[in-house]
Image (cartoon, rainbow, N blue to C red; front, side, top):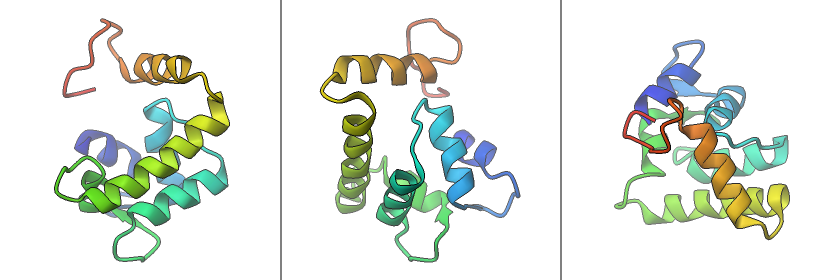
Length: 111
């Protein structure tokens, strides 16, 4: 996740703006429109500065920060429903396939 964050941080500021967040999500196979990106950014931007720090980004995946994670997942679920309707299997397959960079059918920690 940290590697993904750093790759998306094009200006090397240590924060992701909304455009860089879009890059990070696309690299995970998640294509969001501007409204979805804004909702997602707002749900994980703890300090409300309009930028996502690495710590804020990691919180989405951290069990100890369930409120931020729950809000981020709610935005993600909204995206899935808008993008795929009720076809959750297709959504999971497409996201998995996009994330499986080496195409071995297994997601390892680097992916």
